[in-house]
Amino acid sequence: MPYDITKDHVLDSWTNEETGLILSINRYGEGEPKLQIGPRTYIKKDGSKGSLKAGRLTIEDVVWLAEIIDDIQDRMNGYIQA
Image (tube, rainbow, N blue to C red):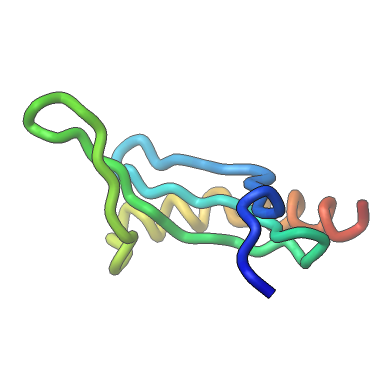
């Protein structure tokens, strides 16, 4: 079955303002919600936004993730029960 962009939904997202790391809860069709780590955004020298794979997480990313993980889990559980 081919990928259908209309079935791919971002349910929630968080952005670390310090590091540019983005976390999001995504669901494809009626599938289970899943946590996506990345991409990481940044500002280019010309002032435009760029993004790249999250790669390895810094300690700042890990501390931020630890601070919001309960909220992420609660929201994911809400989507499963809905």
